[in-house]
Length: 417
Image (cartoon, rainbow, N blue to C red; front, side, top):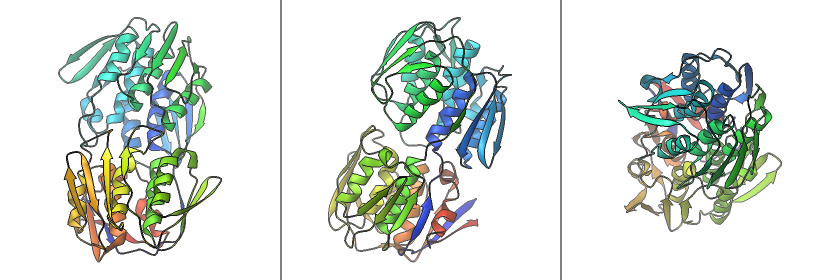
């Protein structure tokens, strides 16, 4: 199994380019199932999660060609309505096929999803939305079995903000008869992108970027070409790498408007940020200031950057508190960071981070996608050598991270264990 080896690399400098957003591409692949014909997605990185999703779409009858920087999906022959356990168990985003299969084939049998082990992430909100639209739902031997001769517009009230449930409900509602109103919708950029793609395909959705979306059902959709938005989590990870460096770095091909909450916290930590179009230059502080962070739904601080920001706070001049209201159990990286001589203790679901003078290299193990990125960042600033194992997690969401960081001067390489 591969592992990443890192030697202390504080003096990063130069430009680092952000890839397309994994969390926008995965639902876009499912959206393509709604329109017979070939859709084309561009600015697509090389990620394990996307390969897994492509395999699932092929099983369902779609033709998927996944090449460097682009992906074409021809769903003309979509015919199979079951997403099997052996595929769905690998990746939570597989549940996105539920809405399109139900809308187009009138029936879907989807295994309960898997993915990162970061606490309970139920699909109840997805199922309630489908039931509101007229589907009957049965749970049978670990599978969600949904049927509807005809989906009908309805009012859908989400008990909590959920990106996945919002997107899945959108995909089902666009082909439902009549009007659907969705309340307490997620406002993340990936939801906006999904709305844009569906409208370009002929859907009628209003309320973009708000918590209330209105969908007028249409009879059919047509395939489109879409360029993927930049990955805000990858961009944020690289910005935090810049804050940990001793020299400025510039993050290119990003969307600063998607990262305002992070940039505010980086400024509080003492960084200077220079925003020029789609680039952000991070000028690191001489002394990192402690900052309290609470991860909340967009436009607040992203849960997917909580672990990486915790690394920055391990070197702050004082104590900070990190809380995650999205996934309160998402702190498995704390034990690994403490192996690198960080001083973090848990008080319930809050990480109390006492800044230290320096981290020290050690062997650590990635527990999930964003924790693995945090450990790589920690390795860059830890004295000596850090070895990160179970890096298949990082390959799910970061395209060639060791090459990109190496371009900034990081001493980092991949090794076959």
